[in-house]
Image (cartoon, rainbow, N blue to C red; front, side, top):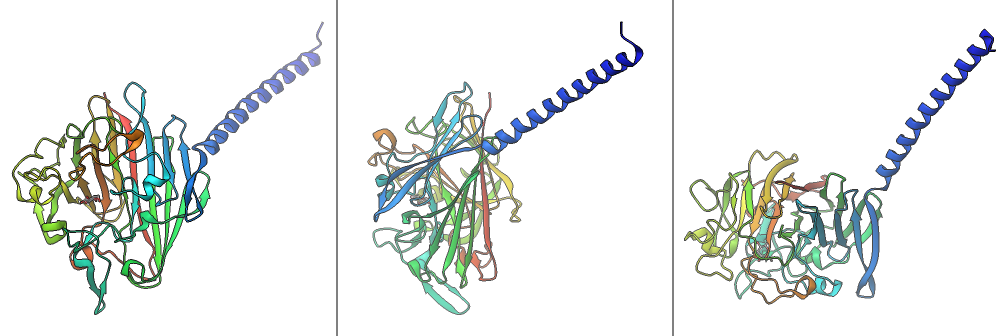
Length: 399
Ligand code: BGC
């Protein structure tokens, strides 16, 4: 027989035990959560080759959903992005190569970090503070009259230092004063992050010792069917932009903004990339490439509501796989290059030749030739400032 005080003891014991078990449950689930938060993305690295007797690494970030991103410290190239389609099948959806050596020989900035100034600077020349600067020229017809993508040896040809590898990959590169003609020593950082929400985030920051033009961008070519799986003309694209910067021969900028309304450049509503690409239009024709009669897209869209803050600005969608890419950026412009110059002569991943329009480069950026157009958003970085641009590539599926 239990006495009243025994009963009280039992009740107290049970209550204590219950409380204890509750607190364990809470603690263990918290522990698991913080464990998994600390664990993802998983990062691995492997030795991938050597450049000038210095090791080149290939890093892989894997998130909780199995999405993978691979980045190398040669040229800070993004080598692969593996995402699921609507049936859960994973494919690598960017163009690129299988070996470090192929990146050393890369023709087309396939996944590159482009700098110091991406896109063209007319005749490689600009003036600032009553001084004229001459940069190397590497683009624009047989005489290569313009500076493009950082010049003869851009950031994509450099071996970057690996400075942090935990939840983010952080690479650094110091561009010397005078490199490719640019004034000022520029200390650059590229940060690559992968969230558990399938967002790949690339952040560039930089500081300089002298005023210098800076436009550092990711140059990723997408094919949402998977690398090597046909062309991108059926991909649907939407861009928040009512204007493009008018291009002139060799794709520098006249300084004028052209309204996209009633032109093949209108992507304000989702439409297939290929729908109007074969329209006779002087701007399309300027882009040249394989299809000389029509040209293609190789232009800068002026993103709406630019204020330097992160904004969702474009969506790329592919119906059959259901893969959808949403691009947000702090940048004012978006270059869309429809792979016009790809002619099936360059070997990409798995030895496949990169056929015409086998990928679309979507490049968040400042406007082409900005240092020569004072009404374009400023690209001159001063010594007392810090350059900071963030680009977010969010992958999802839509049925
Ligand atoms: C340019 C194209 C060029 C491609 C590869 C793009 O950003 O706008 O004209 O062919 O990069 O270099």
